[in-house]
Amino acid sequence: MNDRRVRWLALYALCLGDLMIVLDTNIVNVALPTIQTDLGFSPEALAWVVNAYMLTFGGFLLLSGRLGDLYGNRRVLLGGVAAFTAASVACAFAPNAELLVAGRAVQGLGGAAVSAVALALIMGLFSDPGERAKAMGVFGFVMSGGGAAGVLLGGVLTGLLAWHWIFLVNVPIGIAVWLLVTRLLPADGPQQSPGRLDVAGSGLVTVALMLAVYGVVGGNEAGWTSARTLGILGVAAALLVAFVVREATAEHPLVPLRLFRLRNVAVSQVVGVLWAGAMFACFFLTALYMQGVLGYGALAVGLAYLPSCIVMAVMSLRLSDKLVMRFGIRPPLTVGLGLAAVSLALFAQAPVGGSYVVHVLPGMVLLGIGAGIAFNPVLLAAMGDVEPHEAGLASGVVNTSFMMGGALGLAVLVSLSTWRSGELAAAGTAPLEALNGGYQLAFAAGAVMAALAAVIGGALLRPRPMQVPEPELETDEALVAA
Image (cartoon, rainbow, N blue to C red; front, side):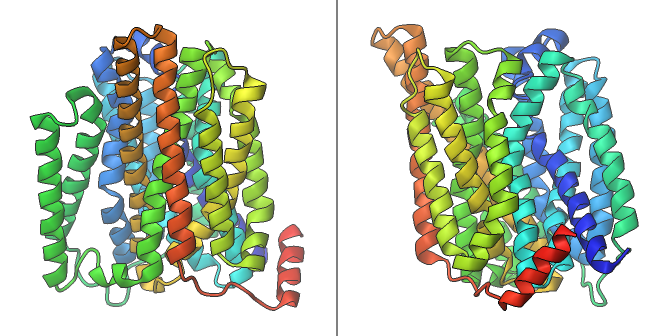
């Protein structure tokens, strides 16, 4: 097997592993009512099936990325795959609510390890600009399409089989990824001068991120102005300040602050936070709209996402890399995020008596086009200026911005939706109209977030040119197709 084919097979193995992780951010959403009934969750505790995963996932991304740089990205990825797969089995057979939440927390730890280093491994596999653009298109589909695919798969598995299968489906995937990675990627180890792990910095940022996620996801329940929420977020902010001070003085910092002096890295984080917040909320809110307002069942909700997944796959895998090579990073990014903003604006107009073809499908298709085009250039811009020996760290930073943006955006938009629905109900609006009015406001706010991401990325990014000689492009395409 030639080196080129090995590289592409390794890419597909890494993307499969990351897809497994991304799926689990949304795959449980449609199954939550069934899980609540079977395991006896209280309404307040049910949210922790999602929150426990987000908490450990978001908290350990930076640490996992640094561990990959110090001790080998392949080692960290294999450890993460093993932990995630074992935790999936535990979740599937959890006899009570407490063990399911614990299993989800371990899944988050494994997911953080995989996500933090997968992008770095992919960047190391592909140095040629044309190949790298194609590879980022595949990885971009995983990042953008995984959320929609998670709702689709969760609905299908829950509707046709049982909720246990949303976790058991990870087991053959995890085993396949482990076997493929061990076969296709060479063993790695510490750098020649790996330095030391910044234990104090690791502790500060991990606790800070976990507290931040905890405060955000609990804000709707406890109240955003409550002493509990403000206290948790205040402690998280103080720990982040302490982390920055620590990193400025540490001999071997966990996150060298000079990384954020790189213009494209810093701007990409802002774009990633805004875009992830809008996208996470879109997947979550559209499922709620179809279930709560249109009355769809779990299977119908899952199948409703199929067009979005198909369009996203075509855009990411067949078109995105060509647009980047032809026009550079900024135009596709701006257009893709702009289309996503239009998609969310359409959802903001969806009425109580809406139909799928008129009020859901157009937004799904536009979201698929926009997300499929935009994620590739966002990832290329974020990783393009980073030195190879810090690729794992940069990958962790990129994923942290997406995860924190998603958690924050989802919490804020759900809070807006709840507030608006309460206001309408208090004014005498019918319950279903009030519920839908809340969703409409949240979709409109998400559209503003996506539009801001488009404007900031288009105006402030200064990526390196992606052009390569035309003959090389043709050769790349021929070899990949072979």
